[in-house]
Length: 218
Image 1 (cartoon, rainbow, N blue to C red):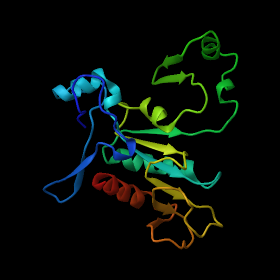
Image 2: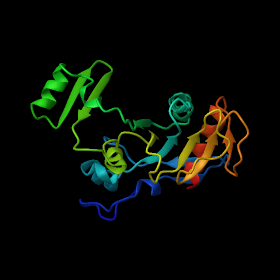
Image 3: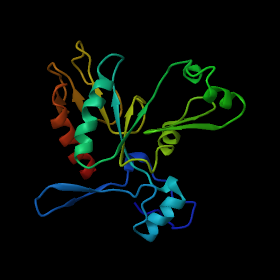
Image 4: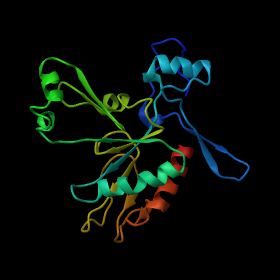
């Protein structure tokens, strides 16, 4: 993705109109042109993106549904299949837990935030974990911006009414597609009255292939 200007600030890029395009290959398969991630400096434009990471906007896809419908299990199933297709995938979970900011209460990270740190990072072998303070409910676009440059695709669990293309995971009693905007596919083990493509829970490879093709075309 090329911003409107090499110099910051860059043009705003809606996440739903993300910067992947698909190209034909000699085998007839689709491939994705991926936006440069931080640390990748193959072109002058990507160098500019590196210095202004908000320009690099990865694709984002929502997975929505009621509690205990199987959203987390579906995402965990999709991740290895998407990774096998060469994508680096990040996950953003929207939580309504009222005490999320106190889950590490008493720990050093919590003490740093209480003392005024806007962000706290913990680095350990094999893992870097970052927490950031935020006043009120984080808007989807701002939450996604925090992951920009970290992945080719961000899978978002939640934000049902957001603008992203979404896969809805239906519960065992649901027979209709939920009234969420921008639904592109459904996951259900029972018949569903909908023109959208429907995948069973065990069809994660088929769903991953369909999503890869869909995101390459849109």
